[in-house]
Image (cartoon, one colour):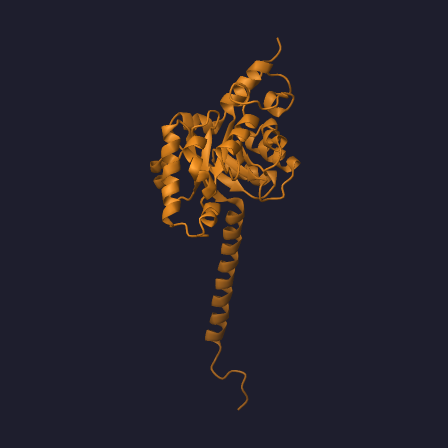
Length: 280
């Protein structure tokens, strides 16, 4: 009998639907080995980037494969472009796409239309790629499974979106709303002021509206504030980044070597007799 294929279930969605918190980490590097190391570390999800990083599609595809080997989800933050830029990562079998700088309800509706199949949207159908098991998942099963096991993440990073925030979050077919405090701080004229009251208010409001409308809330955090964010209602939290990890690791090594070198030089001078090498 022919083998029956099904779409890989999302590890993130499984946890979120059970009321748990899912943790991701950010990858700026395009190397599949960096993705695999992050996946092996125990994160539920890796978040790889195409908005700010010059990764090409072949690099993203390899990262998705590396994560899948360890049953870890991949979120691809896309560059804003045509509908093809939205669906291509999903067809590579990324678990989710993250769309930056949602500015209005109309903007959000367009993203949902392109990322969800009927009846939630009108995402163009292929099925002949990795997510559809290369045409080995039946047409209607493919549409249903994609709507159930793949998700969209819409980022709120601009003050313009606040006027329609509840309308955006309430939209059918929106899976996750993600607050980006960095760009938001610029948008309100307070770049880098992460303790600005409007940042705190907006973060809290997004979590409350997500809960009200049955959506998931996501944001960036740290080991220091992850519990606070979870208590606020955030269920998808991105912690750390590969470039930060490497910078801290290599920087720590060099700092320690410099300390040892300074101690060695100090010891040499301490052991040298006073006046040594000076002619009478």
